[in-house]
Length: 632
Ligand code: 0RA
Figure 1 (cartoon, rainbow, N blue to C red):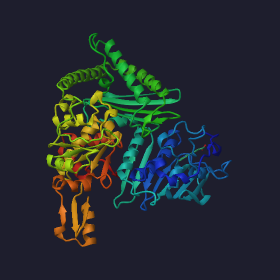
Figure 2 (figure 1 turned 135 degrees about the vertical axis):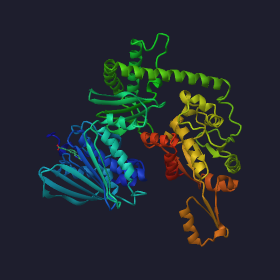
Figure 3 (figure 1 turned 120 degrees about the horizontal axis):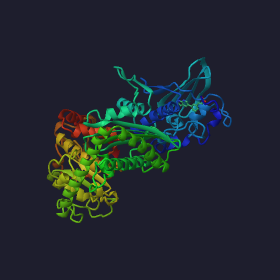
Figure 4 (figure 1 turned 90 degrees about the vertical axis):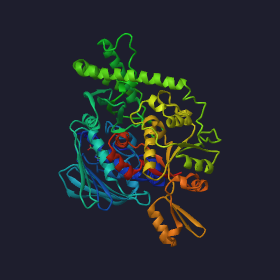
């Protein structure tokens, strides 16, 4: 136990007013994602307590009244008075921005980093927050409203236990929705349970009639995570799991090769995902490539004439969980999704390489299987490059010749330019006439495009629809991809609101996700939302996106049958209508495509693009796409 850790370790920084004024600054947004951020924040605090070794069970409840509570069996937040503020430590932690055990040293060795805005932010954004602490032989209670003290801390009972419960009621004047999503929370808890070996996470959703509950405990930690991720794949060799410490940094890696073409690497720092990787990933990749080449050469598996494996070759088909714990994480990148600590590169490389070399030496048969897989990747890469070079030599990707059917915009400034990818020639025609020629380019696609889920580059570039798109984007593709050459800041997928349209949209999303992931990560991809209905009464016209909206308007304005038109496709709209309803930047609604979670996206794309038809159909019908609504 850390006896010398008490109320004086908690530093005082700032009040809570700014949080209610600009919630987005603290939790990203006030939509469903921001709402979930509140739960993550509270859970992260308990997980921190678990990582510090004081807690092994966390119970998360969504209550009937929409509130959420998180209970842990940790030490309990200290309840004695704080020397500078004169209020208790628990009240300080809840009412002062950035106050918490993590700040000021001497507290936890590591903490969640990105999400570490502090539980005070949750308090500020909730109409009520109640905290119950059990420690020092007592049970204590304190309550807040919108971040302000409501009921002072008092002892309410004796207790021999230790632990903390935080229950909060999110503020409906701040959040667009208060409806926590069972599946989102469950997915997060599963992930956290994998990352924190030996912890039990219990989840109860009491809102529904039928009980919704889940419990996670993984003895194997990230090794179990790999097992889960590779469950439906053809595996090569066993799961390799290594772990070690260096200079206060703890490194854990679990990995396994599969027959797939793709790499699937998830990185975490202090249990927070780093979708954009960072120095730990660089260190791991460098170590992996170097060790593989050395082993293959020393054991005659690579001959003198053979070129070295590239980084890409050794990662093909590899599933990896890379999880590190570092005392002072620095995050970079637009979305703070990338670890920046430079010392972590060498540390990850050394810790991983040392253990991986031992594994190869002790398991020669597995080593051979893995090296053979890499050699196969090299051959495939060289063949694909040769094929692509031929394609390029024939002028296919000649950046200078934009495809004939592209109606480009006049502006050459990517920041104001938009590319509309439109299903079918007739809709393409309407879009060309209706658009703002200065900023909007139109690329009509004929029919279905190639499914790129499992296609190699050479085959993709042999497909005319894809080739046109790649040339229009300007970024090139594969190794030569260059985001700075993107010709349009917004790329808008505009397809019909029927099953065929959904299919084409999915094929395009697969293409972007698999081969232009940076565009998705950067928020360049959008989905147009053409209306389903046109209603008319006298001179008044309404367009609606959903049947529900239509029904409401029909009732409200007493509109009779003849004046309701249902659009079956974009082609039915004349150019003016298409402009007015779907393309006019001042009135249109578009959905921005985001990748929330690489694992989830990987799964979704597998379901959508794999060979099994029933799950795909069901998915398309229920979700349409993984998008977030956004007025642009
Ligand atoms: C600071 C110091 C100590 C515990 C905590 C914070 C703590 C915070 C949370 C938030 C949720 N659950 C928590 N559990 C513990 C402990 C100081 C000591 O006992 O020496």
